[in-house]
View (tube, rainbow, N blue to C red):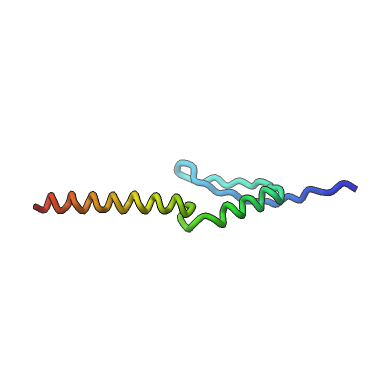
Length: 75
């Protein structure tokens, strides 16, 4: 008896221009588990911890730069 391959349906939503695209695809159990693991590592912004740290560092430096600029302009 040949084993059946179990597939799971996944709905995917992404932004495209002015609207959204919704598609449905089927994943094998292995693909599903890999996707689940990947998504579990993302924060509420859809970033990994390393990506979020880089973004936070950038905005901290940018805020400091703008603060210095504002102090200069105010005299």
